[in-house]
Length: 58
Image (cartoon, one colour):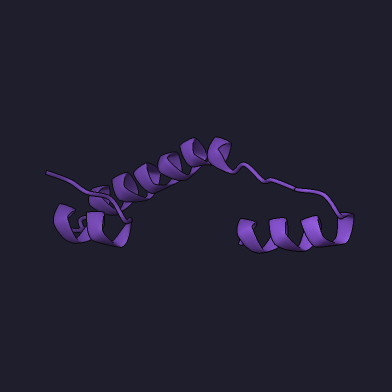
């Protein structure tokens, strides 16, 4: 999505526009971890819960 917005903004503003979403990564990981913990505490099996939450658990 950021790529699409960058391209459109660059075209409209006639200059290179960049969007950096890396700062959102930590919040995304924390949300996945909270979801995983909640589902496991509710009784779901950890392997399938990790898959649902897009996490890798060894």
